[in-house]
Length: 285
Image (cartoon, rainbow, N blue to C red; front, side, top):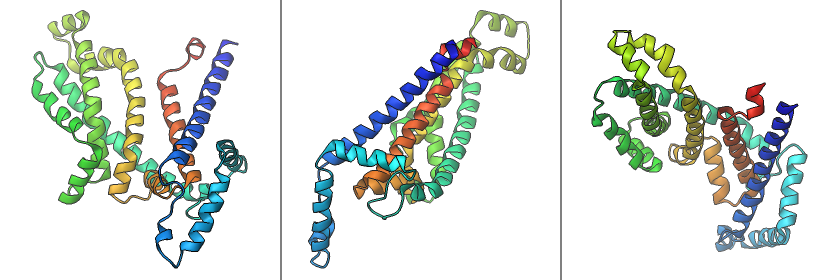
């Protein structure tokens, strides 16, 4: 019975997060400066049509409750509403971009973990780890994602996977190095190393199992970090993914599209947290 109660609480928490994201995003977009403005007003050919559309939008968005109900009704109809910018169902815009963004995330996370774990194993296993291992990670963490992507684009070196992998690897290395170094300094491991036991055997049988909870939690945080870097990377490298779609929606006040992408990312972050922090009832089962 306990696992069922934990599952219900888990689902309720997820639904509450999704609703808060929906309500918060709607309020922020509606209250943003320039929501009821359009560049076409400056062009005499389109000014009348633009003003008519803005008047209709002002009437629809006069009540926050009405805006929320209209967005929820779009989800109940199974299409997440109609895009304000493109005039088609939101899911038709999102569906082809899911594979693009998913592929970018998987390649970036895979490369980042190979780099971070390899560097952390080399830096933590020595008797006197050098501070030189920390310098590249510190420098990379100090560079904003957009600046790193711009430098790669201007220098014609690297790409979106390279930028995201460096960002994630620099962040993950700091945590992995600390966790692995602590494991290597455990008394029983020091004794085993003093007796000449092979490093590979110690790593597989003791170090990695001892640090698996920290590594699991770090993996979920890596997903969150990757999602936060999607928008600048996809916009700068002109990748037709969800990050670029969210940026265009924000620039054009396309609330249905922006809400759909935001909610998908919120659910992804929630699921990543669930994967690394199972409810106690489930663990006991």
